[in-house]
Image (tube, rainbow, N blue to C red):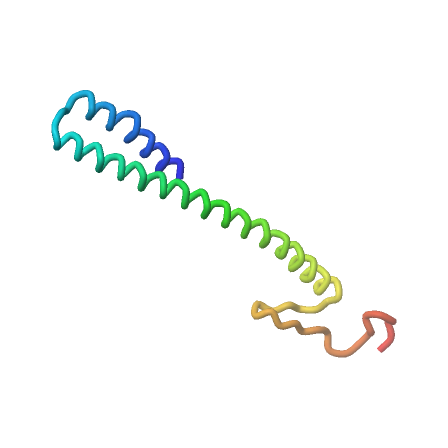
Length: 104
């Protein structure tokens, strides 16, 4: 988005001004109109990139909270000697000592 803003600024401040200063006539006016339209397109790109950046930052923030919950659940499963498989299924020790009372 910064590049789009820089491009828009360059068109508005440098190209259009130089063109107006050095060129006259209908072709120059048409070129200025086209450059202004191009600058508006860069402004649109800049705005859309900002909205996209905001959405992605929000998503990352939400996912970070869920990631903490998942890691906590995985730690709990490991403490209970459960195995969490790649597909999310869980297996636990077959028989033996109970996890709560310590009895079979």
